[in-house]
Length: 390
Ligand SMILES: Cc1cc2nc3c(=O)[nH]c(=O)nc-3n(C[C@H](O)[C@H](O)[C@H](O)COP(=O)(O)OP(=O)(O)OC[C@H]3O[C@@H](n4cnc5c(N)ncnc54)[C@H](O)[C@@H]3O)c2cc1C
Image (tube, rainbow, N blue to C red; front, side, top):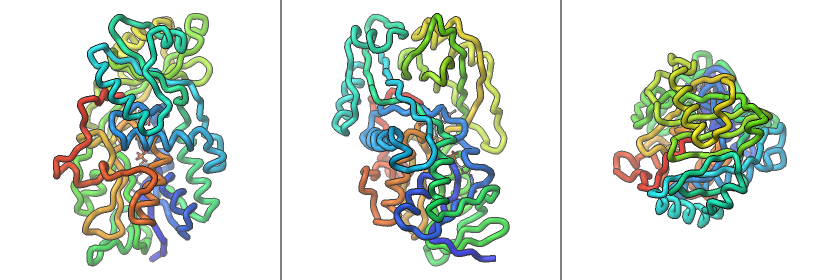
């Protein structure tokens, strides 16, 4: 059977749902989102939810900054459910030999308009007394950063989109995109053919395989990333802000009243999205916990609460692909967000809708994210990338 849709979004993670909302709220009449299983079933449902601005490229910093404005006022800007934004502040720690890089990045972020600055040792101590300081290191502080609930954000976007007329179909994997004479004519599932001129592939870790199926080869890798939650002894460590510690290679944030979430990027391994272990590894927990306690000594007396693994989808320069596909009119790609897609999602939905409806993104210049940059050797790798990984 054939159903007609003005646009089809493939994938119900935070990207697909944000795009869907942005399309329908800009007047696209009957967009359809197809989700393989359930909303947030991929990376989104396992995301740490950290929202910070520290990036070494303008495009990522600008997408994060635009997104923060939405996260801070989600129920007013988008409407619907509370998505649990908690402002904690965010501290970046770098070894003294990386001070030039920190200065470069903070200058770039301030040019974007981001509220961030390098702070003195004394100010850092006053802002966050829980953090241990070491000789020869530097500190930056983002007062407005924090975290929110990734599954809640996806659900809120999908709910608002439905209210505005979009259709969200669960347990409905797209099997292919039908292309005729160099343009999209339909998206195919097992049971239906969705006739459309416009399709967006936002399939997270499944993107490489899905795109291969329609003849597109992108350098995408799904990698496994572990996260742990520790239950703090509140007498020893009542609170701490979020942060990224480049020396000890950890990122962390408070969760609820007494938990601390910690992750790290030094043990990523390639994974099959349909078959990978979602369990935490106890030896890695020990390693990460030890490194976290160098920055947060009070965490040594915490208890293990839980842990799990999810998947990053990464490109060689750890920047996403947000683009239209040259040579296939009506086909768009939005994937490869590594460990930072959640915090970028509101602005990504905006720029994707602008690209699709107006021909180019207006809110943020996304040309650095074009899909052919890899073959052209024009990647976004900078020498100041501290690899803050979430
Ligand atoms: C452990 C972990 C911690 C993270 N921490 C942070 C963080 O603190 N801050 C941050 O900003 N980012 C973080 N990230 C990254 C962030 O979560 C991701 O970048 C983001 O969720 C990607 O969203 P997505 O919509 O592109 O992909 P996904 O959420 O994976 O969504 C893709 C969806 O597509 C569906 N799908 C796949 N194939 C098909 C098909 N053929 N048809 C229909 N549907 C299909 C899948 O079922 C899935 O629901 C983290 C990620 C992980 C794994």
